[in-house]
Image (cartoon, rainbow, N blue to C red):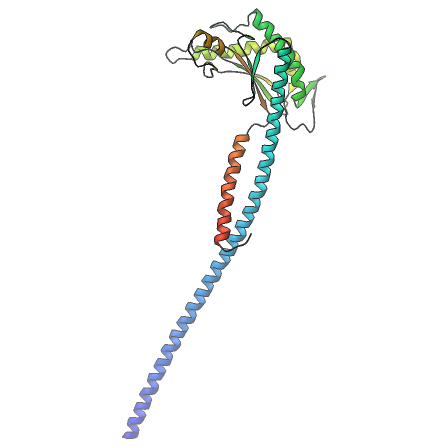
Length: 290
C-alpha cells in the first residue's frame, strides 16, 4: 500500500513537474516569440530611422544645390538691375543735355516724361506741337542709346543676336496715363480709352521719327517697343487740383529687363532656408551626424 501510495505520489509529482515543465516551456516559447517580434520591430524601426536620416541628408544636399542656384540667379538679377539703372541714367543724361527735363524711377525702371516734356490737354490724346517736338527728341535719344542694351537687332533683313549678353531689354512700355476727372460715378471707361490713345499716339510718333527702333528685338525676336494704358489708376500726385491733374496726364517709359522675378526668388530661398533648418533638426533628433 505504501509502495502504491509512493508510486502514486511519485506519479503525481512527475505529472506535476511535467505540467510545470510544459508550462515553463510554453512561457519561454512565448517570451522567445515576443523577443523575436521586439527585435524585428526594433530592426525595422532602425532601418526606417537610418533611411530617414539618409533621405534627410540627400534632401539637405539638394537644398544646398538649389540655394546656390537661386543665389546665383539673384546675383544675375542684381547685375541686370544695375544694367537697367545705367540705361536710365544714360537716357536722362542725354535728354538733359538736349534741354529736356525727365525723371527716373530706378526701382521700377521708369523714365517719366514730365508735363514740361510731354503735355496733354484735358480729355485730349493728340500730341500738340511742343509735345510732338519733344517726343521726336526722345525718339532720337532712344534710337541712339537702346541698341547697346538689346539682345537682337534686325540688320539687312537678318535677325542678329549678340552672344553672351548677360542682361538686355525685354520690353519698353510706352505707358499712357490720365487724371481722375474723367472718372464720373466710378465709371472710368473713358479714361481707359484716353490713356490707351495717348500711349498709341506717342508710340506712332516715336517709331515714325526713329523707325530703327522697330528693328530692336528681345531674345525671343519680339519688338521691344510696346504700349499700355492705365487710365487714372497710377497717379503720381494724388491731389485733386489742376496742378496734380496736369502732372498725372503723362507718358511713362517703363524698361523691363529679360529677367525680372528677383522678389519671387528671394521668397523661394527664404523657404528653402526654413526647410533646411527643419531637416537639420530631424537629423539631430535622430542621432545622425552631418
